[in-house]
Structures are given as C-alpha cells and as structure tokens.
Image (cartoon, rainbow, N blue to C red; front, top):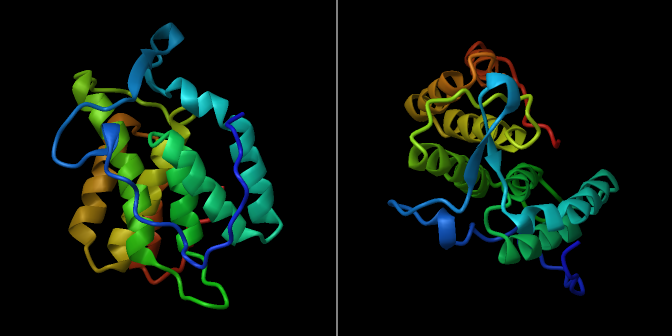
Length: 202
C-alpha cells in the first residue's frame, strides 16, 4: 500500500493529468510494457510495480465512492497518481467522477476526456512501442482499465459533437479486441439512436 497523506478537502474535481513520464504528449516511450499471455491468447499491459503497491488504496477509493465521499476519493486518486502517473485505473475513476455533478458544480466532460484520453494514450504508446498488433483481450484484468478508458473517451467525444474521433477510438478497440468487451460500439450506436447510456462507475 502506498504511503498515505492527510486528506485536504478541495472543491476541485481533480486537475488535468500531469504530462510527465510515459504520459507526455507528442511522442516518447511509455512506462507501461507488455507481457504475453499463456496459450497464445494475446498480450496484456504490464503495470509498473507502483500500481500493485496501490491496489489496496484503489479498493478504499471505490468504497469512498460507494459511500458518496466523491470529493475525498478525488483527492486520494490525485495523490496516488502523483506517485504513479501510469496508474490507468485511477485515471479512469477520475474521469468517471468528473462526470458526476454535485451541489457546487456540473459534470466536466472536458476534464473527464483528459483523464480517459491520458489512460487510453498510455496503452496505445505501450502497444506501438512493442510493435504489437494484438490481441489485447479485455477479459484480462490488466487490460480492463484501458478498454474502460476507451469507452469513456468515445462517450466524451460523442457528447462534444466529435463523432469522427469517437469512431477512431472504437476502431482502435475493435482492432485489439474484436469482442469489444466495454461495448464501445454499442454505446455509440445507442447514443446516436437517441438512447442515454451513462458511463457508470466501475
């Protein structure tokens, strides 16, 4: 478990992802690596050791969210990312939290898109750096946050009237897992048909 710090409530939902390490835009290598799955099933994103050290902290964050303590959960996630910027699940959770309105502010799609996009980009960089063509099965636990990030990112693009970018995200997901475990394509189809699916907290 990562070393904890006292919580300092803050009305901010969580600042934009820090552009450092493997998360820099415009090139650079990813701190995430790939490992081959047994039986020729494909590949999995191999999280850094700091991610495993924060697994219990993420469990506590989920409990905070379930208990309605979204502000403290946001602060805790930001703290975890300060020590482990490539923690994909933390970015996904921050993106989901940014889409939850509270008594003081509306949902923030731009901020949510930043977190979902950051996590999605980290996975893409790892795949490109390894020259990997997949598959990256979403039923593998280490790959699930990347697929969830893709769903959130496509949702944000669609809500921001950018269907071309949403379709690009969906196409990338289908290329690495034709089963589309996060149902990105289904979600976009429902949105375009007038349905109102939501990005649920995982």
